[in-house]
Length: 298
Length: 262
Image (cartoon, rainbow over all chains, first blue to last red; front, side, top):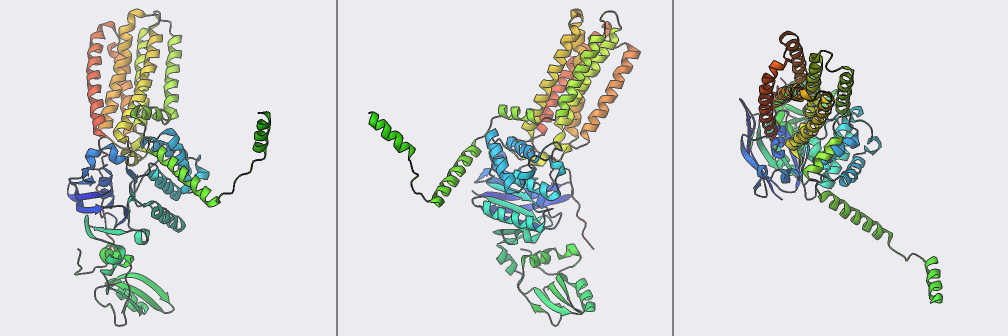
């Protein structure tokens, strides 16, 4: 199975949402990282076929997905970033409703709905109305509905928003377990969601794919750009303004700073091993008001 | 033979389960369960079965409202002494009920947008278009059933008025549907239901004014009603087709702004 995104572009009047996104996806987990407004959601919607690209196309094993119609949608599982529910529905009703839309038979829908509600630990509240659920519970229900038809292509847009740390870990394990023989595209701006489970990371910035590769390889691309140094509060303030600080830890009357910078930020700074979070900060530091010049964005 | 029977009976009563590997048995159960689930999951329902499943998911309040309007109109019709009272009131009642029956279903058709469900629904096997088609079909058939019952009761003792009764029921019904379809075609948000409601109320007020001021239910106006009937029917068919095809893709008008922190 090979999903090809061929120069996918989406333009809204005067704003470019996604610009010529090209990638070939085979079974595995793909983490799509980018700041808010980078174009991740638009890309996801185009992959799912619910938004027409301005140009470019999505093909599965060489076949245009638009032409495949329901045969393509049959392979899809999608969790949107913002999704709703019908207030009168219980969790089980919700699952059975989506199962009917996915074309599952009534008996299969019941079996699968109960199985998945158990998987996301909602079986005890299966007959409670969704409107009474917390944000995390609703998100778990959303995750469960995406799995209903045992999809071969799973598109999850910000799946961990609203989940507590334990639920996040549970979700990551769940994705790792089910990803065999599936293409899982996971969009997030939370680096830890994809750091440990993604086989490939796509980094999107200003509507474009600026970097892609295996997590260790792309983090290696900023080797020598991450520093740690011990400073006093006054120096900390200055460095915080000048550089992208990925971590700040108070140690008595001194601070331990982790800085992402192409130049050595201060005299006692020592280079350290970069992480994916450092890489994210390297590309998106200006979102937080810091600038890094002269970077290679290829 | 008898000895054999006794022996068999005896053996059956003193059976013992042969030794087996528990892990392998568990594995067999797991694999067979998986195979069963995979087989169950591989089957897909057809469109007719899909329509049948959707009946269950139509909100109860829709059926309740329909039943209320139907029973209320039947009750009011039973209180009129046809031929003696002012028939204009009967006609106005029929037209108003027809409009209300038509309107009740539209918030249900639009509920995907009102509840932010359209993204999930749009990328499922049956897609938005078939879902909307199924909802419109179910609600349309229910409306027609209600109107047929009202028509049958109202014309029971007035066979001569059957044509006019049909017109007074179906012209307001068609016009309400046309208005709601037009709104549905152009507004895909939670507010569409409110727009439909507001327009329907205005329509009912206009109908009432027309009854008082211009005698729109006079026999002489029948030709006008016939013309309106055909015009509204043609427009309705066109609008249904346009709306149905417009569900090809979900529309997103959001041009997200991203204001960076300074």
